[in-house]
Amino acid sequence: ARGTVSTTPSSWWEERKKIEQPVPEDQEKRYRGEQEKYGQERQKAEYFRSIQETARPGQEHKERYESEKQMRVEGEEKRDTSQIMSETYKKFYGEWVKTFQKSFGKFHEIPTLESNKETFEKLLASAEETNKIYSSWIAELEENSRATREVLRGEPDPAKYAEAYDMWIKSYGKMLNMLHTLPLRQNMKEIFENITGTPDIYSEAFEQISKIWIDSYAKLYVPYIDSMLKVSAKSAEISRGNASPEAYMEFFTLWMNTYQETNKEFYNLWEKIYGKAFDNFFKNTPAFSPFKEIMEPVKNAAKIYTDTFTSMSNIWVKSYNTSKEAV
Image (cartoon, rainbow, N blue to C red; front, side, top):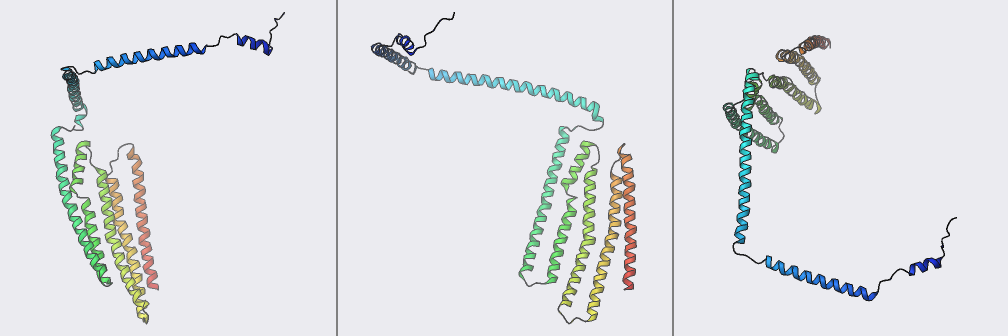
């Protein structure tokens, strides 16, 4: 049978009252004793601290000497360690150079202190020469700017404008041509060839493309701009009014000739320059297997494209001349 447990509030409260309650007088006495003990310990600690902080003769110099001695010992240990690492690295580098010279040194020469010195001397000389060239360009551009400002201050004059335009075109054309022959670029090509053992075909290809662009601009766009200036001047003359039929016919003939010569020059220039560019590209690009088998069809396709474009251009120019004569 289960035991009966009394859960009445009165029985619980009776059990709770049997717990011993603290006496206020005893608590106050114990608290006072702890305070006195803490005060004695604090006085004792302050007394011993004052004795330790009292200066002793030679103690300061001794502590400083000990710290300096420790620093010297640590410095000597670090110096010895770095010296050992340096000697170990020199031995490793020497063995590596010997191994490289015995194997790959037959194909590519490893740089030495002498060759590095020679390379730096070349770079320094090239930098000085290039600095002189850049200084001359800056002076020339400043002079062009001064002359252009004088032209703009005066009355509008097409002749002076054309002269200023030609001045700028010549300056920039000369600078673009000289960019490919800068001493720094030439020395960098030589250094690249000496280190890699292969010709710097990429710089050469870039130079050829840049020269082609400059030639095309000088031979195509400059004459085109000059012709358009003449057409514009003639158009302005007709627009003033009271133009004779002969003036209109002269303007039409000038416009047709300008258009014909410009397109004819463009196609001829494309045939001569860009066709040659394709040939030079495939000629100067080294073809190694398996790229040789890939580049050969590309070369043939490019040749067919240039020939087809040239033939169509010639046919178009001839038909244009025939239609013009008929008109």
